[in-house]
Length: 141
Image 1 (spheres, helix red, strand yellow):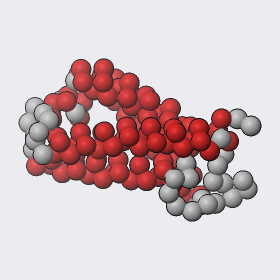
Image 2 (image 1 turned 90 degrees about the vertical axis):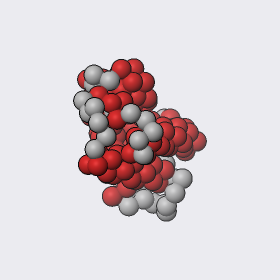
Image 3 (image 1 turned 90 degrees about the horizontal axis):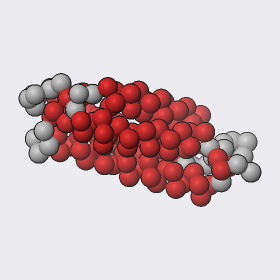
């Protein structure tokens, strides 16, 4: 039995991913509210919080909330078993998105994105991969 077949291992990965996604969700909302400077996000290229960027940060927060749900559902922490194919595919989409996000963070001119968010996003890639690749919740066992 591999670690990807062990529900406790997968659920711990999902819980860690959920906390990290929640941190990023809160950061996006704080940026949208003007509490955290916009220059910390979006590649460090935005000097001013515009209405469009405010909306974009709120949309990003909603998407991150959806990621939490998908990862938790895939890990067996929400939803039903066996899982629909859509949830299994969505978990892989989340993982792929986080790979692209990590690359963007490391390419950013913002030192916060490169040195804080970059490593945290790599951790999200790993935890999301563990959940997506897990063998729990499939129709065949």
